[in-house]
Amino acid sequence: MLLLTEYRNHPLDLPNRIVMAPMTRLRSLPDGSPTADVAAYYAQRATAGLIITEGIWPHSTGQSEAWVPGLQTLAHVAAWRRVTEAVHTHGGRIFAQLMHGGRKGHPLARIDGSWPAGPSAVLDDDRVHLIDGGKADPITPAELDRADIEATIEHYAAAARNAVAAGFDGVEIHGANSYLLHQFLADNTNLRDDEYGGSIANRMRLPLAVVDAVSEAIGAHRTAIRLSPGNPQFNMYEADPAPLYRALVSELDRRELAYLHLTDNDRYPALADLRPRWHGTLIANIGENREPTTAAGAEQVLRAGHADLVSFGRQFISNPDLVHRIRHDLPLAPIREEYLYGRTAEGYSDYPNWTAAELVRD
Image 1 (cartoon, rainbow, N blue to C red):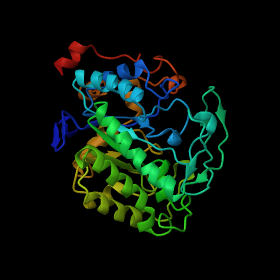
Image 2 (cartoon, helix red, strand yellow):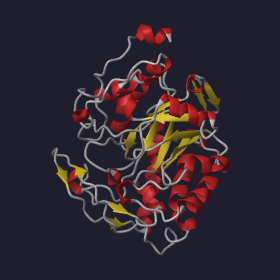
Image 3 (spheres, rainbow, N blue to C red):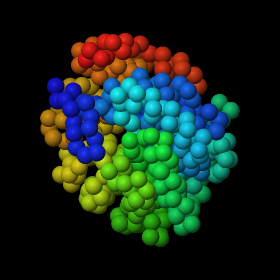
């Protein structure tokens, strides 16, 4: 099975082509540091070819909801270092996903109480997890001005430097699934008439500026990006995603990043359309709006040449030993949905796992 073969392409040196996709789990301390359970959770899944963490806010003004972790302070760096050391001790590789919420957020969900802001004052209709454990209706975001945008770019660069200091092998910039950079790309959330809105070139300006700032901070070989062309999640909309993403991927390709993590969907066959424009490592993800990834489906994507690696999401939640189960065609354990966004190890790091000795024999 190609999925289980090694993959080597600088800087990636992976034992298999199975990637653990980023998944929000809301296990952090009040200051935004990951809990002790987070180290155990990721270490248990270290047999993945590559782990990409849950979204981590680069600055408290980008916290999308309560209990999402950050990478802004020295305390954050120290806590994440315990995670990376645990993963590396178990032979794994791990990238940090930097995720700025943009318009997604609420003052009662943020450790600094700040008001959410995005490209334009366009409401996100998704309810938000609050610090007190409840949920709140969304509020209309403020519009980022030029000074805010410049500060945000530096927040990404600073968080990337913190990620390297914490021992991460690299960072994935979240430009997908309704978060800040996607909000600048999409037609219905970016209503600006300045240099950051309107034309395709203008809507790409902030994502490319962030990529360039992070690349300068830690090196392009440790910088990656995730995109979800045409993804309608949370009422995002691009009238015609193809011209925008063809131009964006062509620009990104020139930057020789570690990888492009691309979400496919039924509306726009991004993998088939954009693969010829990307000459580096490509990770495929089929997205939340389609059937879960299967080993057979992943194998088809690889053999069609649409990607080099395939990311699996929910299957990794309840199957920390997913690679072992795929290799031996074993059944998958079900998810306990009620604990997806809990605050403890229950339904998080307590799923059944093969013993270390059995995994070593793989």
